[in-house]
Image: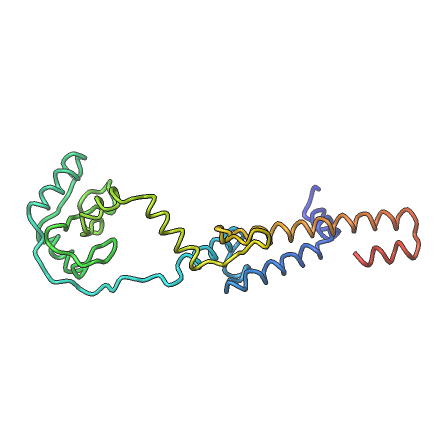
Length: 229
């Protein structure tokens, strides 16, 4: 192909009817999850990702974001944040107690990460952009204890809980042979995609065989077989 015209001629000669049918079947599959392939996802992985998020986030509880009781930011904490975050990294900064108190008030005395209510002791200042240091628009107050909680939590217990939550909210896929729960909620989507394209390939193969048969012997039976494909 040397021109757009050649490309259009080649494309027009393709038999894409079966492929379009496969896409329509796939689209109907995703519609069962309130997801339209043509508007909600650019690709099959993109649509599958939306189904995954939909499955994981069912019954997700959001924080109340109720304002906490006002307090003054601890001066010692501010000095520690300056030493650890700015002096050692040689950042330029313009952070003051007034700045942090205004910021805490702006955040309604809530954690900037999880929105839980702040109190004096575990409150700290965190840089949104580490390269810029503690300056306006690049700092938020948060719960300092959260770091230890994440580090010390039991990972196996967390994964077990996550798996139970997924299974409770996912599509229940039961095997007819061993009657066991399939733990992968996206396996059905993958299998349906694979089956659809496999059927398309088989149909395309039958079509090519029938077309060759018509070329070999232009009989009525051969033409009927070609139309049937």
